[in-house]
Image (cartoon, rainbow over all chains, first blue to last red):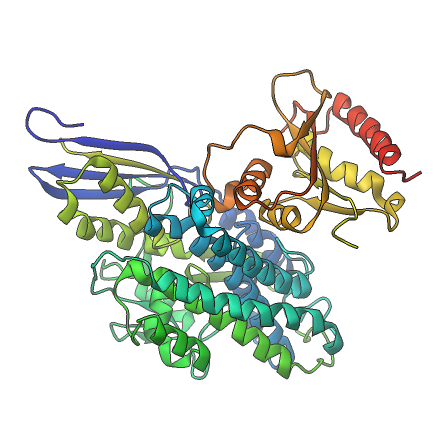
Length: 434
Length: 151
């Protein structure tokens, strides 16, 4: 809405196709953006407080309830942190099964976002319904099949698709027999073709020509595209043990949001998630995924956040490919779980949730009771970067109709696949022009 | 053929009082189902429902609803004839309406898709299921068992 001075207020009461409830505000004076606020007004969820006084063994199942889209991420960060506290390492087939179930979560979460939530932005549709009705039924069908494949992995290893019940500190309650993988293997072989086609489909979109010199942060592993373990590294030269997270990163409460915001300790923003993983770990993708990325026009580095939709598709392909590799190499373990003894200690872990780095820290009493818990989800960490993207990427379209500005803002926010539920839920957009 | 076998899907959150009506119907039909029909409880997001709608000829969906009618009222709807859906999709808000809307625009709706919606009143977390809804569940289980020749 424009006033006599030329200032306008654009307000969106409900931004669809993101997870949870929040808001966004752009403040514009004299044609210049002077402030951006990504506001999360969903009430705090107090999970860290719920965990105090509970048994270490409950953490994977309690934290899984933080999110119905990425429960595996919470379970994995929780079990790894507990194992760090107890001084044990889970290796061999049990480690491989954990990586396999994480592949399942990446496939289902990424596919839903790429095809159903984000693609309509690039194709000019209000949502997946319009997109499907306008001739993209095959893409939607392909996505549903891909997501089903991801769900199948999670259900096969985890016991059910949402909030799996088979993951525990030390390993699993029950592990699959080698022969039982056959139907899943067939499903994944078909899914690999779908994933290749999804990369091709997304690569044909039109992308806003914007880049930023992000400080990318992700796990870094010697031999693998990171999921469950590694050091925390950044494009700015950081290379630290996970236990040193709080020395280099801090969370800050800002007045306009119920979710803590993540910064480097020097106050600068950083970006975690698919784009960060890709930029720091491109050479660790499978050959098929690397080739598909190249064919899609992605180099080893990508700083255009709008192209993150292609990167997500590449990660889906990688996850399917990696799942097949793990299944092929799988040897049944001697036991579903390794032995350990609880002890008074502090454990740390970071794993790569679909949306980015998920850090957990637990201080435990001698009997394994949780004395203190800290959970830093990726959307919290990405909030400052979202605000900076909005400041940087809509300046060139401020003379456009308000609907165009709003669409670009929403598209920009959806580059992050923000999970507001995890960070504390969805999104109002307000542009204040004075 | 699996495609032709009736599939009964109960939708709802078992921890939210009357919203548990769908899963409770599935539980109560339980062992009576035999090989004549398939049963599925969906207690989270309904993206999996779209897959079922694409893969089956005969789907029965049982869900709780809130339309203002007295609690326990049973509504029977032909999913293929419901009003076009006007909303949009989010990962956390993908319900029965969204699944049916998507299946419709994709042209993959089953030949027959009936929705039994039980009017509820208690939908809060940890609420107890209301008596009228509990009676409606028992009555619907009986009707479905007869309709599907399970007894």
